[in-house]
Image 1 (tube, rainbow, N blue to C red):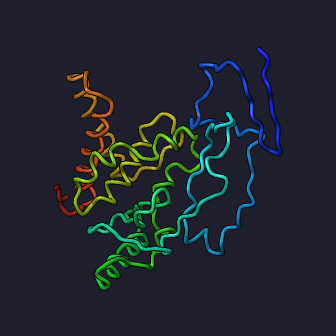
Image 2: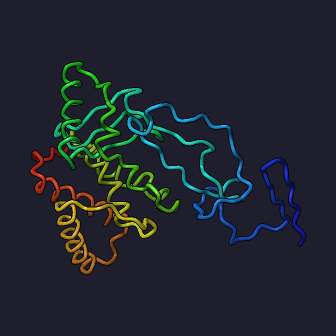
Image 3: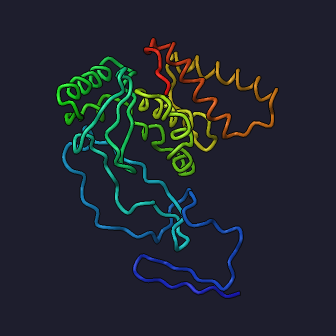
Length: 255
């Protein structure tokens, strides 16, 4: 069956009277950018973006024309100080507000400077009785969750964009929801095959991940009918309970 290709500027549209069942669907991840993707006159990043903002992922996906192109025409930067930020009570994780898809959660428990950043935000929040607005250190000192998918295959970015455990587990973690949310992303990247680059693990992260995998392995042998979805929830919950003890986190308050 002949195929008609219409070309206008940089947009190529392929029409066919027959739909192939094995063709990638709109929105699916892809690996090699097509030559005819649209290009927009994107604004240059504003000064200081590299230190006070976080570059958001822009995976390759199949668009409505069947081309493999970046999901957004221009890069998106998330700058926490543009709005506000807040941290969990223990100061191990913070967020920059509910501004999806731009918002980030930050792991601030990996270094002294990161912990100092979170403590400063907590103190500002207490003084204002609302939110902190001096949030630049989150981008420079703490670890944003999107760093876990940086330079990963597009399939990984899409798979771990919003792990199911964010809504299934983290609302139960009372005043530690940011901490739970960060590790929901972390667990997804660590245990998803399409994520080819795994994050370096701290001693506590490595110990707890190994322990949970061993426990889950025994459980799955006893109850092989358990769904993958349920095992993901179990994995995150057990991992957080272990990690909370390992890093001497105050007792996690469950709702």
